[in-house]
Image (tube, rainbow, N blue to C red; front, side, top):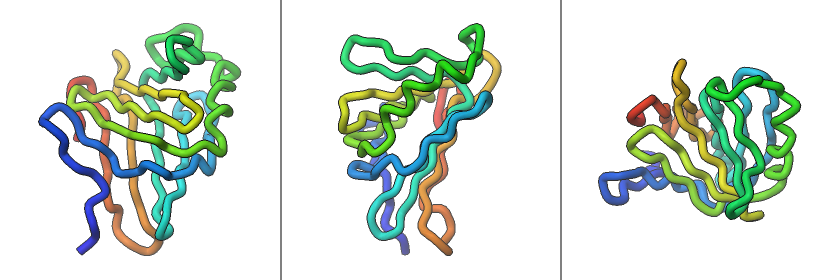
Length: 143
């Protein structure tokens, strides 16, 4: 039986056990920007954002992007490039449907559902095995 890669912590969120995973790939496109993360034991994680996305470093807002923001210009996604080569410090899926990931360079990524659909998809895998974890950020929950 595969070891669980998430742990319940209080009833308000799921702590995703991807601390130390490196940002190996950044996907920039109009509909679903995303990150591909690489961890030990050939474990990989993927997060695709379909809803609203924000990047912050402390109080500084680096990026606000998504269907609830207008206009959607993919060139606005350039701040995501600052995540390339960093590693995950912590990742939490909040039960109200938001995901929060903190990176080693101090940037915090938040993704949540928009007024038109899901917020994000998270997939944790190992090669040639069934997924270890699949999560979806909905308007008011995670599934």
